[in-house]
Every structure is written in structure tokens, then in C-alpha cells.
Image (cartoon, rainbow, N blue to C red; front, side):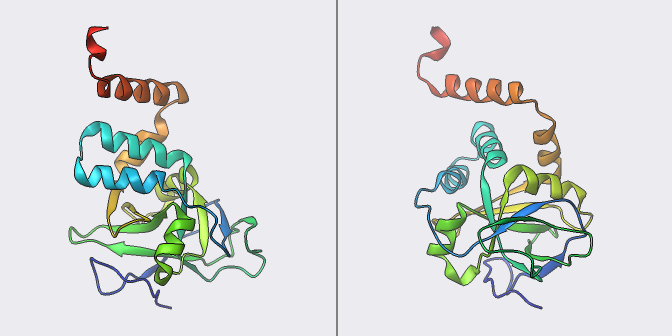
Length: 192
């Protein structure tokens, strides 16, 4: 079954069967969110792909939720209620093949706003960023994730190596990195 998602990289992305990996998703029915913190970071990376900006996006993505376009959703999935996939589930998720040959999971930042702004993407599930990253490391046929903005058609790609490194960081290391970025962004911070 083909997805109806339109793409700026290819005529139409193809859904990809992702072998069973424990993950929890929540099928969505309505829109409730109006702010766009992850999309704002995606746009910031598009304007200035500095190490600090990319790290800020990757770390924020760990704690965020993302929208997915899924097909073959099990009947036991109750809209707006989390469910855990099982070995017999054959979920398909929208993916994107990019010009360098990589195949990426297509994830939509700030899912409620993405669904409201781009209904043609037909987002019907949410997943926590950390769970999405852990799932990607278990998938042999995906090379990372394309995080799509809820505000524009901008996107940022996070590869498996970056995801692996990110998941290896301790909570303390994440806090230290965020503090270092904040300090570096504050004028005169080095002289204090």
C-alpha cells in the first residue's frame, strides 16, 4: 500500500515494513498543540548548522514526541491511547529516500501542529523521540530519521551514528552539554 505523503525529494515516499521492535505509539484523532519547539530548532539548523545548533536539536528530540504516518495499524489500537506493538504486527511507516541513497524514517516534529498545518501528510500516530531512536537502531533497513518541520517544508536528517552516540550519553552529560551551549551563547560568559 502506498502512502499519500507528498515529498520534496521523491515523487512519493514508500512505506517500509519495520521488523518488530518494542515500541509504543499513540494513534491520534485531533490537534491540541500550537507551539513548535522542535520545528523552531529544525529551522535554526537550516539557517546555521553549527555543532551547538545540531546538538540542541538532537538532544531536544530525545524528549519530544513525533508524528508518524502508519498503515496496517492493529485494530486493538484505540485512538489517543498508547499501545505497544507485538511480534505479529505488520506496521508500515512512511520513509523517505534521499539523493545520497539513504532511506530515512519520516517523522513529523510537533505532531499536532504538523497535522493541522499539513493535513495531506495524514499523520496518524505519535512516538516519543527516545523510543523512535531506539527503534531505528534495531532496524536494518533504515539509515536514520528525517525530522520534518511543522511550520515549513524544512527538515533535518539525523543519522544512525549520531543517534547511537546520543543514546550513549548519560543524563548528566546531556545537562553539561546544554549548559556549555548556553554559556557559549551568552555574551561575555567566558570572562565571568
